Length: 88
Image (tube, rainbow, N blue to C red; front, side, top):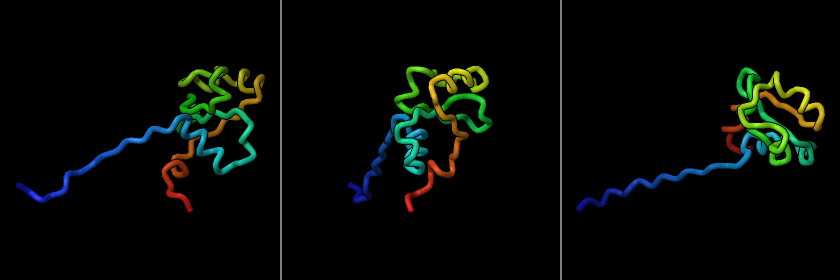
């Protein structure tokens, strides 16, 4: 019998994670619906809860610009360095 510890793995999934990260660093966005776009600003990769009724996940940015304007939804380029950084 081995005394070697058994590795334990965990998985965490955050709802609207990238959008939530943007709000943590921009408190002025707390009441503003937001979407986060892919690396090339091609499509939506995250939506705040208040943006979800108006924008589908994966929607191409060029197709939803009018919807964003109509409902006051702010779009942000993805910032993966921010999303993986440890808190300061």
